[in-house]
Amino acid sequence: MSKWMLKLTLVSVLVAVLAVPAMAFMDNKFEKELEKETDAVKLVRQVQQGGYDLVTTAELKGWIDSGKPMVIIDTMPFEASYKKEHVPGALQFLFPIPDMPTWDTKETDGKTQADFETLLGPDKDQLIVIYCGFVKCTRSHNGAAWAKKLGYKNVYRYSGGIFAWKGAKYEIEKVE
Image (cartoon, rainbow, N blue to C red; front, side):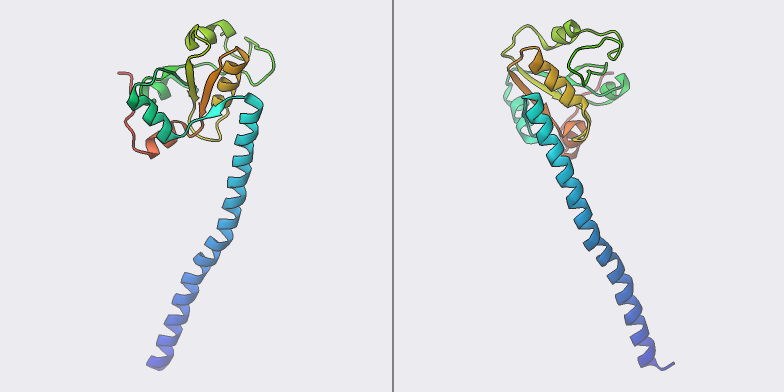
């Protein structure tokens, strides 16, 4: 094989090697967009159903930095998760919040609506922010929806949760 043929073969192989991942990326971007759309519509429908509002990572950080009075609730499912990392000032709500029209203590490890209200506090006008791990997690939706059901008026879901908080490289708190 001549040098020219060898160079042409190497260039052809290189083009093929680079083109395959590029084509895969092109196809994958459409699939990723479909997934984003599905997630976005699900989030919007949850917000509409729950009657609460959303807060972004940057907005929540601004509220915290300004000293805005609020109750922040971490709904991560394990005590170790909260102890390892949580948004500064967050209180832990360890048991699952029911995704149902009535509170069922069988679904919440015996915890009652009153337990949840005690954590949220008596002021129904208090700013409440509820989060979990990430956008797809429904624990924050259930918590925010129940806070609204219980008469709290100023309820926000921080949908990005601890993953977005860490993604923004904001300081976390730990329980030693």
